[in-house]
Image (cartoon, rainbow, N blue to C red; front, side, top):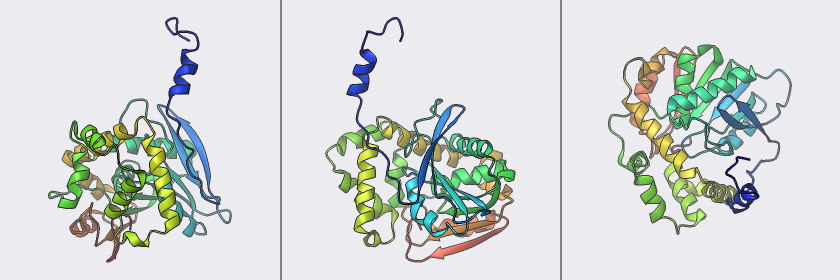
Length: 299
């Protein structure tokens, strides 16, 4: 306790802090906390069905969490020994000590985790922002990546499609605060349905149970005091990455990736335009492309 802190002040502060619900853990999953220099990451895993399976790491997109990968992790549990992390400031991971939410900052977190876990090289999978992060990881640390799977990766677009503009605007100073005030009376279900409409080619395919879990997670996130800050700074990080040139440019780094790469795009993606798919296929030197005609951003 500091000399200026009144007796009982810490306990009072803790009592007044917002109560945050515990994060959901699906059947067969485990959560653990990993402390690294300057950050703490929450990692979700499924015990492999048998020993000797190759390791995999899943990286979520903007506003997402490791829970976004639960369904796919279950489907691939007989193929890989899978883990999914919550990027700093998202899911159940607290903000990074340095407040760095750039693509490079998130990539550094992934690299630190892989170095500390000594599981590499891994099958690395990323969606949206996570796709940009994984591209950077694969380019600068090829020793950590066995294969690369990118689902609608957030690689720079010259012409952002109209449906993605509201998300991009989060990067502008003051916009997030304005949006937060304008939507303060929105229910968690309304917010969740809006996200699903933006991310799914056919939102009706989301089951009632999955919707309920998503609403509960939205309620939990909205109670976090750093929720909007993490969203704003990460959105700004994507925009900043779009403007980088030279060797730090994401397209230039895509050309440096050595790992075999699978590119997955949905034709109904409202956030990352499908017209970027051919460019990505040409940029990654050892790539295959999978197009899902009825899928959206989270194909």
